[in-house]
Length: 144
Image (tube, rainbow, N blue to C red):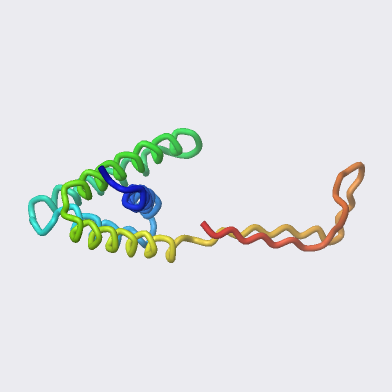
């Protein structure tokens, strides 16, 4: 049985895999996860690369909205489970090494996550019967 910290690392890893699919971070995550799960065996690594490619294909075909959210949830859980199973099979020293590699991959995805920005300009606007108490320019930046 894994301790909470390792379960959290596996969960973050699963989330990072799904978040990275279709982004500039994908190539690095794809190869890193395949290397970790392949454990130095070329055949296992190729199989993991195929699973990762299938994940990306499932996300691309999911569309938008609720359908995409359901697919993302299933895939995050699937990858978290695979990572937990790997961690359970390792010695304590190996677990710590793999956990460090997973943390680095998660940080890589977070560093490359796109910044979303919204710009609203209320210049020369007229508000009638509204709850707006001020006017001007509003800039919101959301880091995900």
